[in-house]
Image (cartoon, rainbow, N blue to C red):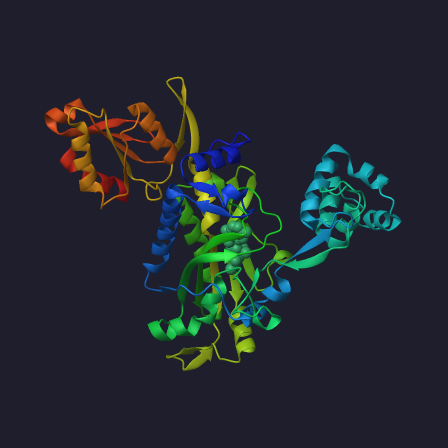
Length: 492
Ligand code: GAP
């Protein structure tokens, strides 16, 4: 990826042009925070999910699961989502628009860049804020003071009153901060009352926890073992942003690994290594990946230890996967709220225990955006700009294109025969429209690793050219060898 500031706009534009991603309900003006995967997008997304699924379930110690999106409302009380899955929000008293406190904090930061913090505080009429800030700012520089203020909800709201409302422009008109739950609510059955209210799941993990013993009993797995699941999750994010990065509907690829409590550290470290290697093995440059440990005071309510795998997006580093040691928090809470035992019976020691859980939780949609960003490249070829998606061959939506040089002299017939031979083995694309150079460029933008061209020489000796996407080098091979050639190249 060459990041020249407007890479996201370029990705959005290429995605629409080539059928990767469309805005949801576009003809109605779009639906904020929701995106549709087009013909190329769905192939890439499926390939990412397939690689993840295989990396998990082709092991003998991980089982698969597909639990329902709608779950008993008590699940979300037990998980802590009803109480803790919230964002602090403030409203403009004038126009009633609602904002996340940290979003306005970002605006305040922009203002701070133009005006110094000192000048900003001088304007502040509230003596209480000034005093409190003076107290905390001894021996600290401006940026440090700013971060303390923004991390403190009450303080930041007071200071935010220095800002004009981004919606209506009124000054000093914000309410105090209130917590808003991010779960989408709906109703089960025809009656819309509080008794029938349920939530769309905000994570797939809980379906795994409540099925822990069902899976263990039916597969007779012994600790340590894992359960993997891919599925949609929904969060009523207040601030959707950066294309697919933060959306309201998205897909997760989660694996919960159940271990003996004494082995938690070992497995936490093991999964950190496994997961970052998975991204690298699918073509991500190590320089664009990093592990970020959560400081103790920022850990989620269920976690003892946590690390994020972050990707270097055009807008900066952002989490693509979270790895948590969730201890026995979830199983214990589900025991408490359901009244059912979720203890594991150890046949050897004849003891019952609640296992600890090491969670690997990747966003399929967010990984999609990271793989797309990583693959995007622009270069100059013979005085012309070439846009190319250098996707890993296993992820590329289309593996090979088949191009008759011209639409006559028997070339289309041979090309069609090649298409028939390959169609059920690889995802291929037949293209006979326009000059061959233009057709190559189209496939480069889609990320197709190989282009097979039928030309005049094919008519004489049944050989074809195979052009490789990244190097643009061409070789000639007998057309009858195409299937084994592609098989070898794509599996390497
Ligand atoms: N079960 C743990 C869990 O859900 P999380 O850090 O909230 O943890 C895990 O989410 C992953 O899900 C993130 O690393 C990210 O890839 C993805 N994700 C979370 N919220 C998202 C959103 N609003 N849009 C897209 N992906 C999201």
